[in-house]
Length: 293
Image: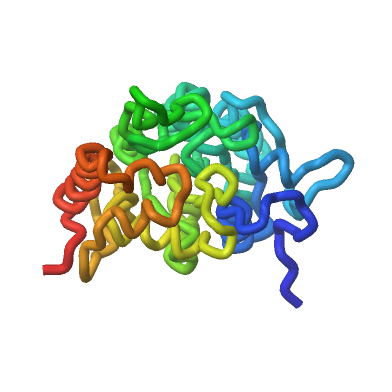
């Protein structure tokens, strides 16, 4: 009988992409895994004291140090000669990966620990009030990058975490999304079959912070890929080996119009800013050769 390794009954919002992603990850990873989790939405909604939804060993680390704690866990398994029996996963949100946790992750990758690190990217600090992070897209309306008379939202483009990780020359780096669950689970399976550091960047729509209807989570996730704003790519040892090809290139408006955080971009006055977002999507398509020719 199927028993999920992230049990229902947690307190995630309806339609939470991160809850769906975490369940897909741990179910395919299997029971022989130790999860190290930064502070963030996932830790908060899945481990409300005295309960836990995790059916595998779970360690809550500080916001910035899942990489350091996971390194210690992996070293302990080596000492006990159990490194081939148990996988270690270090996971965090976008803030815990691209901002405050990046130093510890970089050290873990550089030292070559056999750990899969995962970024559940909902593109802002959601559990503390929807503040922008380094993975918040250009022109997003958040509580720390509000839209107003002199502002069209977040002024910086989203960091390219995939290429930052890949620059470390680690064994496997890939992007995935809850919009394509089989592809996501294939990449988890592949990552865990390889030795050394691995990184998976998972795009997770957040109905609360993105202000879309909960039943649109999968549609929003797919449109991020189909517009070119979140390309699905795979790297091995710094070399691009595979991309998810698009039969057609949908305009970014198809993705933006479903979300309240981008509502301001659809007004006639915002044409120039909308063009900047389209340029980012076009650039991704060209950079990674995403279109079928």
